[in-house]
Image (cartoon, rainbow, N blue to C red):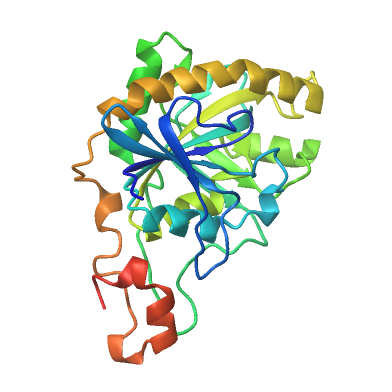
Length: 283
């Protein structure tokens, strides 16, 4: 099976109902199994893969996601571009619940997640200055605007560990740093996608104002707004897929060029085998 584009569905986006001729496949990777079976189907002439980030029924906590298996499984399918759907909290008054943000930056506040494929005798330093694919993010932002949704075409996503929501002190500090939105899942997904030379962009749907605002965030509010945002995410994805070019000239497609620091003859054979889907063209 093969797919060029993948959708990683977050809170509220659990199924691949926009696809035709669907088939579920199980994929093993050297890092274990992904969150769930991957659904592959057709969208016109394009093959699209769909992966529910938290597993069907939302059963995997953000800190326990096997993001390395998720991204490598998509790489093995031939995926070149990932659209990530993610629910977020807002750190600014002008980013209102039910707004959509297409972030361009990330600030990492995670602590206990595996954030690289490259270990066990290999050192790789990829560039990550611009963590989201600028080509695809620009397209998604423009489409969101065309569809008349209230969209913010850039913003900094602070990724916290979770699964608990922020304390008031944390939320106010993130505000003072100038961050725009807060969530739990953009990392290490974005880092691993870059290491895999896959373009990664996000549709971030605002569900609440986090706890800095006078209206405290509750799980009931979050879930209610997740449901409201689901239709918007589907509409954006439906418009985006046929307009995404598979001819890439972005930084993502060349991320490993010159980034492998370890001498090829010093990389253990088992590590070369384990990472063959990632470094096979370089080693």
